[in-house]
Amino acid sequence: MPCSGHLLTPSHSLSAQVFLPAKAESMPNSGRTVILLNLGLGDIALAGVCSGSLGTGGYISTPMIINGVKRNLIKQWGTTTISLTVSQNAVEGNTSITFPTTFPNAAVSLQASVLTDVAGGTCETCRPTALSTTGAVLRGMSISSNSGSSPTAGTVTVYWEATGY
Image (cartoon, rainbow, N blue to C red; front, side):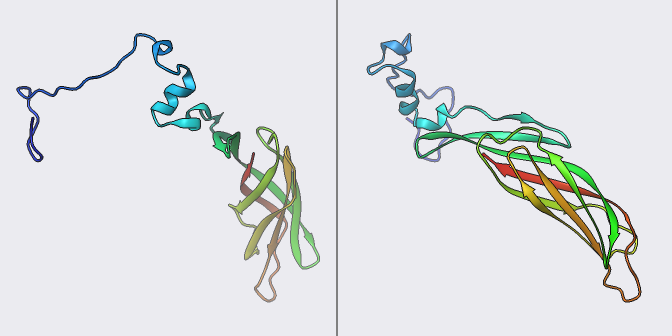
């Protein structure tokens, strides 16, 4: 047997007894769960694999086992535009988005980031005003902090990401 720090070469041999049953049913306490437990994988191997749709708008569903219950954490994303119109000292507007897939239980968060700006605006923001399992309403706003300058109407592009299960 090679010692620690030595390389194993083809001239070395290792001996061990390996039990490889012809069929899983021949193992004591047979069954898929027992085999997975013997591998040390437990319930996580029963969770499944990710699914989704990738692109500029899409989603990923990640299966997991939480307290013995199978759940899917779902992340969805996309882009939209909001037409902003003049309203008193600000330029603002709303738009509705529909998620690529419905959250089966709940939508728990939504973040939005403004990509483009409006002429004359120095602070473009976007926030959700409504959130459901199928979509959301986003409110965009452009404010000018320059005295004597006011933002003009226009369109902003917004990236959004929603999380749910």
